[in-house]
Amino acid sequence: MKILKIFQSCALTVLLSYSLTVLQSYGQEAWTLEQCIRYAYDNNIQLKQQQLVVNQAENNLLQSKLNILPNLNASGNYQSGKGKVLDMETLQIVTGSTVNNFNGSISSGVTFFRGLVKKNTISYNLYSLLADMENVEKSKNDLSINIALYYLQIIHAQEQLTVAENQLASTLLQVNRTATLVDAGSVPEGNLFDIQSQAAREEVQIVTAQNTLEISRLNLAQLLDLDARTNFQVVVPDFSDLDISDLFTSIDEIFATAETTLPQVKAAELNLKSVEKQLAIQRGYRSPSLSLSGGYSTRYSSMAKHPANPSEAYLFMDQLKDGVNSYINVGINIPIFNGWQVNTNIKNARLNVLNYQYQLQLTKNTLYKEIQQAHADAAASLKKYFASTKAVTSMEEAFRYTEQRYEVGLMNFVDYSTAKTRLTAAQSDLLQAKFEYIFKTKVLDFYNGRKITL
Image (cartoon, rainbow, N blue to C red):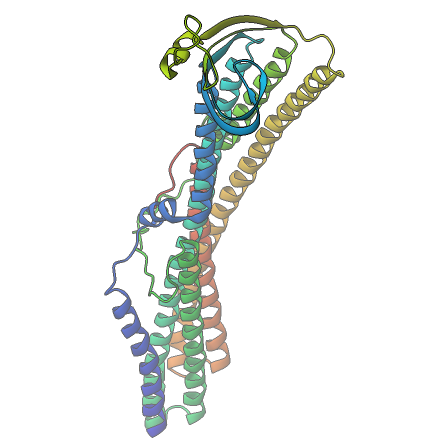
């Protein structure tokens, strides 16, 4: 049976090559879901960009607080000229002499009241900062869900590959049995060719499953921005004691939790508060403003004459001392008419508040719809899982009966192949249903305020 030996050699080569790949892969450390999520939090470029927005908001908040403090400015000016030069001391044109002038001053001012504009600006920047921080958390949540989905796709692909390998192993045993029957003259040699063709098709299924697994690994590695050339592996959790329950929390209860915990709702609420403060800022520009300012200055001129003795040199320090001038100013500014700009800004700010009220309600409505969909998906996946479990159980019993009849020649190959194809399809559907149930329930748990874990 030279053909049989060649065929078995090819089949074993397929299984062996994949086994070697697996052994090499597991030489590297496998990643848990928690490690994947933590790595993404630390290295995702979009999250880093959003964090920069948060940092800018922090700077704006700090600056608005510092704007309450008085300002303080100093200035100095030194001028040396020859020819027709204005003497700043006498305010006369001096011709033919070098004139040196110096002026120095220091001033400060503070606004005591302006309709609480500065206070409301601080509040506006604070709410904007908190909203930006919640947006970062929203992005983290979205990233976590995507990672969990890709992670489960890898595990699903691995189990699909295991099913395909088990199917091939079973068929290879059938190849050996059929070859023995052919040698004994119990069945025609055509039966052996048929079962060998079945095994060949299952080899193709293994290759397809291997490719699907590698693509699933590549998808997660790319999502994490890992080097795609590395042989990325994940830890497979133990799903043997998978808790299958149809006792889902009601939609309204989940929404009540999500409404108070999820960052997208918090961000919408904070954005509304920030624009309400923006409206208060615009209203503040209607109010009079009260300010206080003061200054201190002095000067020097090389052409200045000593006031007590004009023939005596008027020293630099003496001039600075004698030329001191200081002032203090209390001012009030009352806005009366400025092209209706203040009123226009107030009207626009009111419209902005109304817009963000709509946005908050839209965010809640969208969240409720998402929870409704997630609840329906979880319930549907559970029904599919139960139905698939029953289908596999009945298909396995039917196939055992079919296999026994085929081995003793009471069933043709076409019926045998059809039964095995149905069993494989049922097992594949069960795997798909199982991981759909796991993912859908994890999404539902997420809305219910639980972290995504496996």
